[in-house]
Amino acid sequence: MKKYGFGADVGGTTCKIGLFSMDGSLIDKWEIPTDKTNGGENILKDVAKSVSDKMAEKGIAKEDVEGIGIGVPGPVTDDGVVHTCVNLGWGEKNVVEELQKITGFTVKAGNDANVAALGELVEGVGKGKKSLVILTLGTGVGGGVVINGKIIHGADGAGGEIGHMNVNSEEKTPCNCGNCGCLEQYVSATGIARMARMKVATCGSGETLLQQKSLEELTAKDVFDAAKLNDEVALEIVERVGEILGDAMARVAVVANPSVFVLGGGVSKAGDILTCPIQDD
Amino acid sequence: MKKYGFGADVGGTTCKIGLFSMDGSLIDKWEIPTDKTNGGENILKDVAKSVSDKMAEKGIAKEDVEGIGIGVPGPVTDDGVVHTCVNLGWGEKNVVEELQKITGFTVKAGNDANVAALGELVEGVGKGKKSLVILTLGTGVGGGVVINGKIIHGADGAGGEIGHMNVNSEEKTPCNCGNCGCLEQYVSATGIARMARMKVATCGSGETLLQQKSLEELTAKDVFDAAKLNDEVALEIVERVGEILGDAMARVAVVANPSVFVLGGGVSKAGDILTCPIQDD
Image 1 (tube, chains in turn cyan, blue):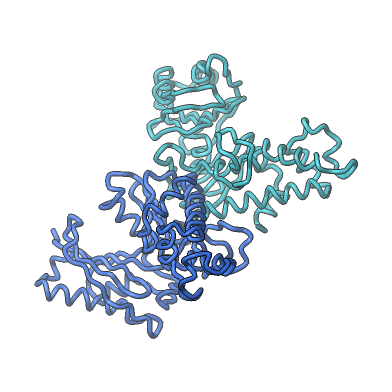
Image 2 (cartoon, rainbow over the protein chains, first blue to last red; image 1 turned 90 degrees about the vertical axis):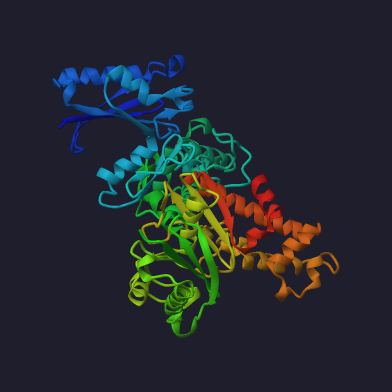
């Protein structure tokens, strides 16, 4: 039996890489920058080199490695092909084939949120459960659905794309995906900052702590920080975020009825101040 | 190898029963009334007797029957237990165990819309596909989701309960389930009639063909019939039904991304006049 496996989470800014023992325990983790130049053509080579460097550092033999699992921020078909991945600059790319060719290892690829959902079910908060839905609230909103231990990839690799559920038929500003009114436009870090800018623009002078920064500089973290200080305007925005997120999760629940919902990504670090209005909804 | 199988679809008014060969072909079908007296205690006995009568009529030996599949209008757990089934008067009932005991046959039970989804995937419009979502638009709205050939039962047997997706947070009238604003309240036969009554009540005299009946007697069929005659008020209602249904289906699509959507139930007989606004949405 092999001894080790590698996991790589390729993001728009950094690739997070982990070395695991075969029982799923994390041995080491590190990050490398994501090189998006030239249509992201170096990304897989950089991951491969980083894995190879780590093996040299730890004295790991090639025959002791089971393979590499890689998550990418876009739809991935069952056989590991990405058709387009805007955040990495990729067009059509056979991730599995390419990384296998460079490394000689077995490779499995999946959408980042889908594999995060699987990870949470196998070794995370959903351990011992049959089904789980994850929403990763970061720059965008990723989603993953795992039922009976299997990822719902969907007919077009778009299973679990909950970030693009329509939640507002009145919205006129388009989402990155081209549609208007997607969940991502309201509950991602970018979306929360956008709602804050719109709200603060209508406030009188001195009405909110959020006016301590220019509108352009406002972040989701500013909103949660001000809400924790009981700033009325910030609380109103957080309430709205929780309401929209709670409604969307309820809609997912009538389709998949999962045992567990997991919120991940930077926005989820807000903690109770975010989860309370979701539960109230 | 066995030669035959029976299928029973238990509804609030009738039980539809079918005799099948083992390749899934329908040999015969018939209906018996659903006896809801005494908490529906006769329903399974009546199904068993009807199956037994059919075997006698056709000269089918017990050893040639593989078993009975039964669909019921409520949530059913993986092991065939119904916790409550309002439309049949049932409280907690182990459908599989009871029907097995009466008949001596192997029994499989499932929610009616879930098994309809499976049936459409195996022998219906989804034949050869991997995944399918069905919405049955009848007195209520049933839903079923099948992914990679398996029904999504959900952690509480509520997988695919799409009829109870919230589509209107402003609704004050409660659904049968107790929540307000469920899909079922707008796109079931009952829901369409309800919308028609509300709309017609605001119309001036002679404004719509729907005034040829009293408000209480208006049905979904009246609405579709009037819409086909280009009645403006009826067309507006149908447009709204299609819009609400299309929005809900789009929300299901970002979760499950099925290969096929199927609309069933009495309301689906309206045909193009219903499906066109859904596709436009």
